[in-house]
Length: 272
DNA sequence: CAGAGCTCCTGAATGC
DNA sequence: TGCATTCAGGAGCTCT
Image 1 (cartoon, helix red, strand yellow):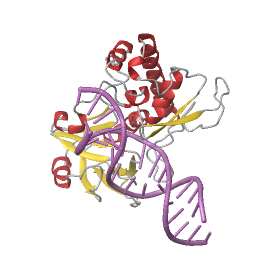
Image 2 (image 1 turned 30 degrees about the vertical axis):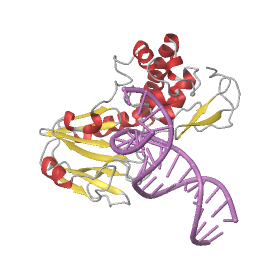
Image 3 (image 1 turned 90 degrees about the horizontal axis):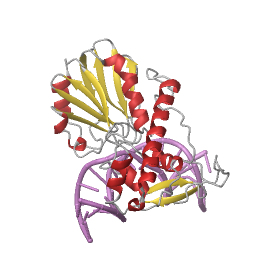
């Protein structure tokens, strides 16, 4: 599933094919995504417009045209690819942005948890309001995390996955970051000490930065119509490794369900 | 306000 | 082989 590093990689991958090129046509084949797609608005505001910037906020991809933003979220199963215009339509190909340079930006999403939104300004995009700081920005640091944690009694795993606290930490990287910081996922947030918060902050940044770097080097091909687009194999220490030996101490990795999500941790390395 | 639970959906994995 | 069931999960929404 696309997490922040994947989304960042997608942005970097598609940008060269779209930036400063004009949208010739918009094709919408399915409007029933996370929120109903506003076909009228997308056609009206995107057709004929040049793409002037591509940015990422949290896991949202912001595609800017002169009069506003197309905001794309990949949900759990969404992909964005750059394809030749003649590429046949596959199952779950919900949206095309046909460019005047002959390329197509194609959105595919089997589970339809993704979304396509339009806003004249970013402030108009409801899901972008009330988002916490970017994990790789300067506003996110150990002291900030510590101060926020004091106001919360939920499990630290849920705490760092809370988009009001910090964005872009999904289920995989929450487990990986807590392992790197040697913190048990069930630790109540308010029990976090300042040193622990600093450790956790650095762990989150380190894990995400490493994954983005890996994405840049191992990304197969965004422009391929066959095979897996975009996503890269992750260097995971605990996630999806239940009953496999911890790479540090050889203890068997355990799981615990926190909220509705599966968490993976080492019972020896992550003591508190 | 904080937090728990619900919800959307399909494909892969599992069970019989 | 094939059908039915279970599960995974991003994140906004509702309810307590």
